[in-house]
Image (cartoon, rainbow, N blue to C red):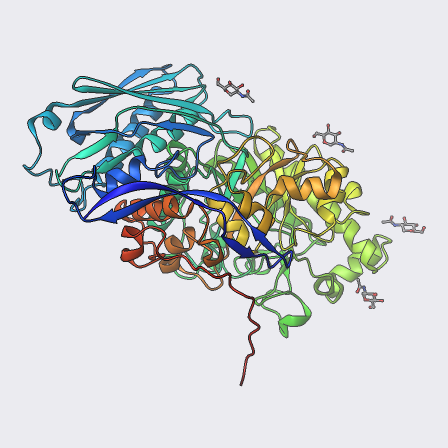
Length: 612
Ligand SMILES: *[C@@H]1O[C@H](CO)[C@@H](O)[C@H](O)[C@H]1NC(C)=O
Ligand SMILES: *[C@@H]1O[C@H](CO)[C@@H](O)[C@H](O)[C@H]1NC(C)=O
Ligand SMILES: *[C@@H]1O[C@H](CO)[C@@H](O)[C@H](O)[C@H]1NC(C)=O
Ligand SMILES: *[C@@H]1O[C@H](CO)[C@@H](O)[C@H](O)[C@H]1NC(C)=O
């Protein structure tokens, strides 16, 4: 059974919009590989070849801005791939490393690949054994660290002449070139009948991401993740061209980071002695991420979400560094157990913060963005702590909410100054989570818009706070718990300027998940310079290592109809070959029989009842 690529114009598909409550007919062009019996008459190709070349974007994920792919492929062996770097000396070590990763990923296309020795067997034809693939990389820039100003665009051109294919990558810097290598990997597949690889004969891709910040948050406090698990997450992010790993390192549950100047933090705060990140682990991950086009944004959540790890102050003569630690009944002092908040009344707390910041700035060097946390402060914790209320009173503060917000604001600005000092006086953009301090009538008093970016978490797309902050000229990172976000977060390397998910109009209309659209609806313009990007969250209360890879590849059953489906499923297969343990999205039969697993009828919303 081999495949043919058919274009199917589906004009009758309809999807129930849960948000809008109407039926929207969506004319969608979909290209499908159709399985047929090989009767020797029709021109049929293997499934992989069909997928590589079917439709305007083949199996590229996320979809590039523009792509032109030839219909033909040429076979080659991964041993005949070589690099011609036309780049600056600064960038060479990074590029060599990225090229090794690229070649490793090509090898993994082989179904029997195992640990560095792909069994390139003897089925290939003599022509594929000599066919060469030259990867020419032209980079003029000297940038070796990703920043919010990095231009991540690239061009990729493939042409084939006789027994040589040349892939030319042109990018303003290493980071664009790295993305191009990722795209190039996706223009290569395993040839099932020949045991070789194949690459599209000709192609042109122009690409640039719609957002500067394409993030994934990982929480390593509720559950510890090994360095290897984090590496796999970074691999998967790189394959999806996500560029920001937001590391929520600590929380009230545990403090898994070993600090040379403050060993007690991990001593008191780690779950076990083996569940600790050492400075060399962190440095390793920063470099591992960088080669994959990813910046790591460390977060030290404060002044709430601290607790375990901070208890050593009293026995070491520094007083209570945190209050309400593990206090019960937790419902009165925090949003989830265990509780804990920094002790604003204790000046030693700031000395300790400064030490932590200093080490963070060193091990994460160079820091591009720093996350100050700032969510879910519980005023009642402070207000029921005698040390804090007496301090408030002694400083002529009242005990009402506004007085506490003032002190929280003082804390935030001290923290910002301490971090800048710790970072050799280099001020980096800080991120804070939206909170009661960032509401419309308080935000300008406490949050300096040139210093901070506000991360919009736990909000609905219709929440007017988004428009209010944009009108006040704050920069935002859009980050929702709603399922729609992860969907699009995986694929947000898309569209032209204003339109996050622009090739997916139906998604966009139905799921209403374009940050620029949200901005337009609330403020009358897309505010593209103020929306820095988006972030998907991986809180670890209920996820541990085993669920990590799978969650990366979320798909929403209600989007089954849409044209990205087949590319997305293929992308997931590709990640599995690279060693990511993703769950199957569908039975293999659906992978081979594209389009056959779609629901014909829209699903109606069903109300669930929970019975005891
Ligand atoms: C990014 O680089 C490309 C290629 O050099 C260039 O065309 C584009 O204008 C640059 N974008 C910005 C925002 O500088
Ligand atoms: C508090 O107010 C009193 C009376 O106005 C004043 O004497 C005192 O210096 C103030 N204390 C502080 C810490 O500002
Ligand atoms: C703090 O406690 C006092 C009573 O001791 C109360 O009057 C005040 O409203 C409380 N403040 C907050 C923010 O709950
Ligand atoms: C806001 O931050 C900028 C950049 O650090 C600084 O120049 C400015 O003085 C700050 N504004 C206020 C009101 O503190």
